[in-house]
Image (cartoon, rainbow, N blue to C red):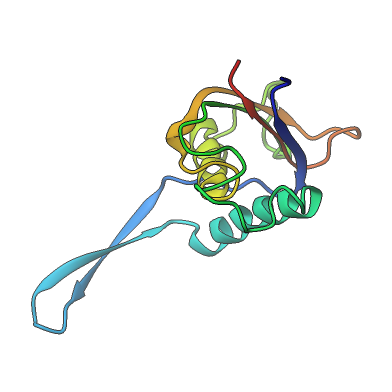
Amino acid sequence: MPKRNLEVFVPGTPIQQGSMKAFPIRHSNGTLGVSMVHNKGNLLTAWRERIRVALIEKYPEQLDGTQTDGGYFKQYTPVVLEVTFYLAKPKSNKLKEPSNKKADLDKLVRAVNDALSGLVFYDDSQVVEINASKEWVTEEHPEGLFLRVKEFQ
Protein backbone atom coordinates (compact mmCIF):
# COMPACT_ATOMS: atom_id res chain seq x y z
CA MET A 1 0.00 0.00 0.00
CA PRO A 2 1.51 3.40 -0.96
CA LYS A 3 2.36 5.80 1.81
CA ARG A 4 0.13 8.84 2.10
CA ASN A 5 1.42 12.40 1.94
CA LEU A 6 0.23 15.98 1.82
CA GLU A 7 2.15 18.88 0.29
CA VAL A 8 1.46 22.54 -0.25
CA PHE A 9 3.16 25.89 -0.81
CA VAL A 10 2.07 28.58 1.65
CA PRO A 11 2.85 32.11 0.46
CA GLY A 12 3.74 34.79 2.97
CA THR A 13 6.41 35.72 5.48
CA PRO A 14 7.27 32.74 7.69
CA ILE A 15 6.91 33.61 11.38
CA GLN A 16 8.95 31.85 14.04
CA GLN A 17 7.66 30.65 17.38
CA GLY A 18 9.42 30.39 20.67
CA SER A 19 10.21 33.84 21.98
CA MET A 20 7.95 34.61 24.89
CA LYS A 21 7.26 37.67 27.02
CA ALA A 22 6.07 37.53 30.61
CA PHE A 23 3.75 40.07 32.19
CA PRO A 24 2.85 40.25 35.88
CA ILE A 25 -0.87 40.00 36.57
CA ARG A 26 -3.00 40.27 39.71
CA HIS A 27 -5.68 37.59 40.04
CA SER A 28 -9.16 38.43 41.30
CA ASN A 29 -8.25 36.95 44.69
CA GLY A 30 -5.33 39.39 45.01
CA THR A 31 -2.50 36.95 44.36
CA LEU A 32 0.17 37.73 41.81
CA GLY A 33 0.75 35.63 38.72
CA VAL A 34 2.45 35.70 35.34
CA SER A 35 0.89 35.83 31.89
CA MET A 36 3.03 34.42 29.08
CA VAL A 37 2.48 35.58 25.50
CA HIS A 38 4.34 34.98 22.25
CA ASN A 39 6.59 37.80 21.15
CA LYS A 40 4.83 37.93 17.76
CA GLY A 41 1.44 36.69 18.96
CA ASN A 42 -0.90 38.12 16.30
CA LEU A 43 1.53 37.51 13.43
CA LEU A 44 2.19 33.97 14.65
CA THR A 45 -1.52 33.18 14.96
CA ALA A 46 -2.17 34.50 11.44
CA TRP A 47 0.78 32.50 10.03
CA ARG A 48 -0.41 29.27 11.62
CA GLU A 49 -3.91 29.89 10.27
CA ARG A 50 -2.53 30.59 6.79
CA ILE A 51 -0.80 27.18 6.85
CA ARG A 52 -4.01 25.43 7.96
CA VAL A 53 -6.17 27.21 5.35
CA ALA A 54 -3.72 26.41 2.52
CA LEU A 55 -3.88 22.72 3.41
CA ILE A 56 -7.68 22.67 3.79
CA GLU A 57 -8.12 24.45 0.45
CA LYS A 58 -5.81 22.01 -1.34
CA TYR A 59 -7.20 18.89 0.37
CA PRO A 60 -10.87 19.71 1.15
CA GLU A 61 -12.02 16.08 1.24
CA GLN A 62 -9.13 14.81 3.37
CA LEU A 63 -9.10 17.77 5.78
CA ASP A 64 -12.79 18.61 6.05
CA GLY A 65 -12.83 18.86 9.84
CA THR A 66 -14.66 15.57 10.36
CA GLN A 67 -11.52 13.56 11.06
CA THR A 68 -11.60 11.50 14.18
CA ASP A 69 -8.54 10.69 16.23
CA GLY A 70 -6.99 14.09 15.61
CA GLY A 71 -6.19 14.48 11.94
CA TYR A 72 -5.40 13.07 8.53
CA PHE A 73 -2.61 10.93 9.99
CA LYS A 74 -4.26 9.13 12.89
CA GLN A 75 -2.81 9.13 16.36
CA TYR A 76 0.32 6.96 16.69
CA THR A 77 1.04 7.09 12.94
CA PRO A 78 4.69 8.17 12.60
CA VAL A 79 5.19 10.97 10.09
CA VAL A 80 8.02 12.81 8.35
CA LEU A 81 7.94 16.59 8.07
CA GLU A 82 9.75 18.24 5.14
CA VAL A 83 9.83 22.04 5.11
CA THR A 84 11.65 24.66 3.10
CA PHE A 85 11.29 28.26 4.21
CA TYR A 86 11.84 30.86 1.48
CA LEU A 87 12.96 34.07 3.14
CA ALA A 88 13.42 37.57 1.79
CA LYS A 89 17.09 38.50 1.94
CA PRO A 90 17.71 41.58 4.09
CA LYS A 91 19.51 44.33 2.23
CA SER A 92 22.17 44.47 4.94
CA ASN A 93 22.95 40.74 4.63
CA LYS A 94 25.83 39.98 2.26
CA LEU A 95 25.92 36.24 2.99
CA LYS A 96 25.15 33.70 0.28
CA GLU A 97 23.30 31.38 2.67
CA PRO A 98 20.23 32.43 4.71
CA SER A 99 21.82 32.54 8.16
CA ASN A 100 20.27 35.79 9.26
CA LYS A 101 19.25 36.50 12.84
CA LYS A 102 15.58 37.09 12.08
CA ALA A 103 14.79 33.48 11.20
CA ASP A 104 15.73 30.72 13.65
CA LEU A 105 15.09 27.41 11.82
CA ASP A 106 13.93 25.38 14.81
CA LYS A 107 11.52 28.14 15.86
CA LEU A 108 10.13 28.32 12.31
CA VAL A 109 9.55 24.54 12.40
CA ARG A 110 7.82 24.75 15.80
CA ALA A 111 5.27 27.17 14.37
CA VAL A 112 4.54 24.74 11.52
CA ASN A 113 4.18 21.79 13.91
CA ASP A 114 1.66 23.68 16.02
CA ALA A 115 -0.31 24.68 12.92
CA LEU A 116 -0.52 21.02 11.83
CA SER A 117 -1.50 19.59 15.23
CA GLY A 118 -5.13 18.48 15.30
CA LEU A 119 -5.53 18.90 11.55
CA VAL A 120 -2.83 16.90 9.80
CA PHE A 121 -1.77 14.81 12.80
CA TYR A 122 -3.01 14.36 16.34
CA ASP A 123 0.09 15.78 17.99
CA ASP A 124 3.55 16.84 16.86
CA SER A 125 4.99 13.97 18.90
CA GLN A 126 4.09 11.83 15.86
CA VAL A 127 6.85 13.56 13.87
CA VAL A 128 9.78 11.14 13.87
CA GLU A 129 11.90 12.88 11.23
CA ILE A 130 12.26 16.51 10.18
CA ASN A 131 14.01 17.74 7.03
CA ALA A 132 14.10 21.53 7.21
CA SER A 133 15.98 24.25 5.37
CA LYS A 134 16.03 28.00 4.79
CA GLU A 135 16.61 29.47 1.35
CA TRP A 136 16.59 32.95 -0.06
CA VAL A 137 13.67 34.01 -2.24
CA THR A 138 14.26 33.60 -5.99
CA GLU A 139 12.16 34.19 -9.08
CA GLU A 140 11.16 30.51 -9.00
CA HIS A 141 10.49 30.48 -5.24
CA PRO A 142 8.63 33.44 -3.73
CA GLU A 143 8.57 34.13 0.00
CA GLY A 144 6.74 31.44 1.92
CA LEU A 145 6.85 27.81 2.95
CA PHE A 146 6.95 24.56 1.02
CA LEU A 147 5.54 21.84 3.25
CA ARG A 148 5.28 18.08 2.85
CA VAL A 149 4.03 15.66 5.50
CA LYS A 150 4.23 11.96 4.76
CA GLU A 151 3.96 8.65 6.50
CA PHE A 152 7.23 7.37 7.89
CA GLN A 153 8.59 4.46 5.85
